[in-house]
Length: 492
Image 1: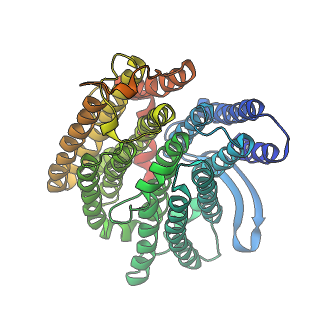
Image 2: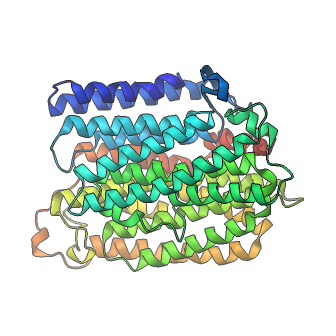
Image 3: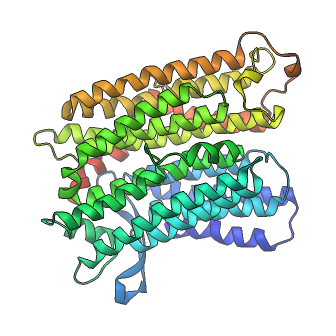
């Protein structure tokens, strides 16, 4: 099933690129393909046993001399991310195109990106992980550059070069890590169990640095986040939803799966430094977001803030502070929930931002006001997503952040205390955004602005219903994640 979920979008992407289909037929094909991939993941979920290690494993030799094989499998960390990604791809593909040109190629690139994204979360081979990591850059580059707004090609190039530089650091680190094994293997499960760099200082530290910088660019963390705002502003709304909801998670997931699990001793040594960087990202992302007058840039900078929370949870989990094992497990669980919650919430926010653009071709907050009456569905969706993003109890963001901060207070109370300031600024920036968009005086140019369509409302309803479900009844998600979090340092 996992192989099917990965390869089906690739096959459908190739078919769409070659078959002479109409725009409506291409859209229907892409939606059906993404839905089938999601269904395959749901089938795997129904047979998943929390805490039983890697499951639904499939393996076939590829380059035996290097120990490289097609290996796929899931645990409680990767399965929730794959399910969230699959759902978000269905939503983004079903969302109306902002520029209805070259529809076949548009949907083909979305499916190509879905195959690469699911492959990254589901693979258990380190070399194939890197292949999918790089392929995701290609798919997003074309979606931004060909279907984005004015200046999109420049933003797409910056995104590609910036993140490619990070991926090359990751490749060097992978090679150095694997060369320490005998016999050579790229099997993630074996590398986690072997701990090949245990007892090494300088060499292990340099390998860790390569992984951390590479994944920090993808996440992104301060100060290597500068590619993100222009990429978001110039991308079409559905591509922004995938960029924020799926691609940013690759960086945090990579930190968990590779350096934290495969370099435990070295990661623990430098966990505090990573925690400080996460704290700076939390504060920087929220403060800079508060200053933005562009709707999409404001939402984009909140991703720096929220991914800071996730990385803080990872740093706490990998700190190896004696006597705080339960707190570290809690922090890692919170980090995974934060990734799922952020994907759903910020994905919805970027889709709504795309709806604003489709109606006015404008992101400037000063252009809006008084939209509560003509666009009540838009206000309701934006309001719910904003309150979830600022961490209101009863919504998914709160479930994630409370676990991260409880774990952080147990290990590094001063970092947790300072990090709470980010929550205050985040609340202020979202409340201010809602006030400016929907209340006050309505500009004459906005008279008759169309509310969300049935299609747009239906897509947002599904995403936001999950945000509420996780907030009021998180047990089904926490059970899946927590058991694997407790097993993380034992190799999953």
